[in-house]
Length: 275
Image (cartoon, rainbow, N blue to C red; front, side):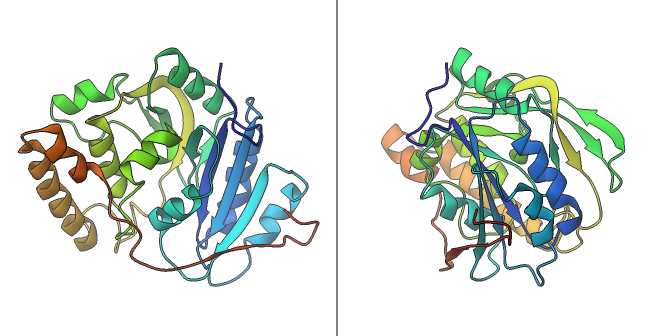
């Protein structure tokens, strides 16, 4: 049985958004339609260039589980997550990308694994979809992520499809707050040294691949200069962890740098009641 936080919710879902109005409504709807309704959803707009995204959220303005915020400047999804985590009081935290869709039983099945298997971070299998939402393939993540990492594999979870104990995020300092991309892999590498990483083998998440997504855009996608530079830095840091001769020497290397950009979060009015 999942123990709810002071608010009565078991899990807070964090959904960053930037200039992706076309898919935002479907992403939010998929979270609010979960068959585990004891959740909170925090949508954070990363200072989008216009307000086209706001009407997409108005149909959900009356749902008390939804909170909508906006950053005072554009900072990237990792810094946003760190900032939101400062006020999260639920025992679990889940993630959702604005152009993806969670299937209705996603959170129920992942929370069950967190409790039954005493896991600390749980992903799931996912299907690939294109711009129009057509399924183009699927991928299963290894059931035991720790084992696969020991065998040399670094990608054992799709970050936006994961659910994690809040205590894990607190101990590890959340995500690397100095970058805009790539730090999900860094987080998994750090977490695997202290915690149990598992995945549900059933497809519970629909992951959209399209030209404007962070992993496909020329400036931020796989193979981009920015991503290559961060991968090199990540590899060097992981090597330092491998050389640690004691737990006392290792632990400081597992804590992420805090956010390097100062910004504020402000509540957004949707126009049909306050959310």
